[in-house]
Length: 335
Image 1: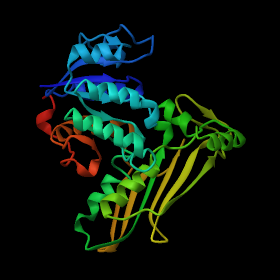
Image 2: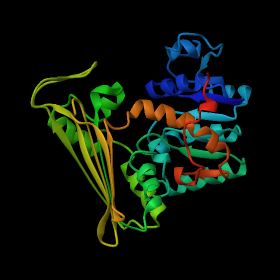
Image 3: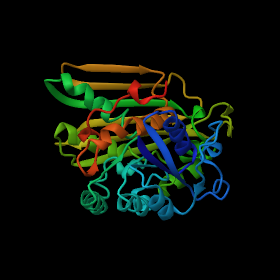
Image 4: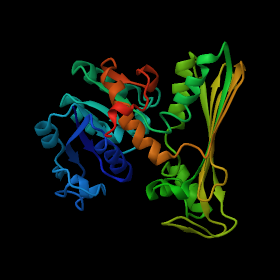
């Protein structure tokens, strides 16, 4: 039985915990969150499981990690590595392997090189592995296209287009992509970095690393998708002329050309959601995932499904490419 502590019980963290609670090889032994509305309550009640697990949510992370002695910490508190690094250090120094939703942790060696080196060193000293993953980054726009090149004799370029209907996603993500803002508000928040999808640069670098390419520079463009009619999600009403979400394109320039192009469209009411991967080379590979990969459901699943591979990985700060193949396993699911 693998002992699990959940660090962060927001919408994604709660979804992960529901998946983990259904796995017969996992035992939830601790839960950490700073939300006063959750502290002191049973984690089963907090995540909407329909039953209690006998584990109270606590805001005292060091005490939980010390008393519960987890094998793995499932971490889901933030997107930016400098913000969550102290939490990761707590888990590492407690001797627990860590799998995290932090997008910037999925490939931190470019934007956060010194911090990545520090975490790698600490993890190595404690003989544990640390991984950042999710659906995007972590799968749809990096691991999946890289896996498709297993049948390639030559790869010239990779183009991934992902379109998601954000109305089907959680409210924090809808806010992160600017849904409901005016165009002026959207542009201001793009400038201050508070509106954008985090993780496209990490996916470019992860793909390039796997292919053995060196990225000279990134070209990053972000623009609003504007509503032409009133559009609703469960939480937001967007009037005509307001922002539905984002269209973001990040290109990896390799040898003076656009070798990797990642195009993300995420907005309320997006029609024909899909993931489309094209690998230009020999042979040419063109794969379409109809309806796309559901971001919230897939993220919850991959964090849990990665645990067996994480436990077999080399100590240190790891990326998806380096792990034994991550996949669903029926033996790990309660029957």
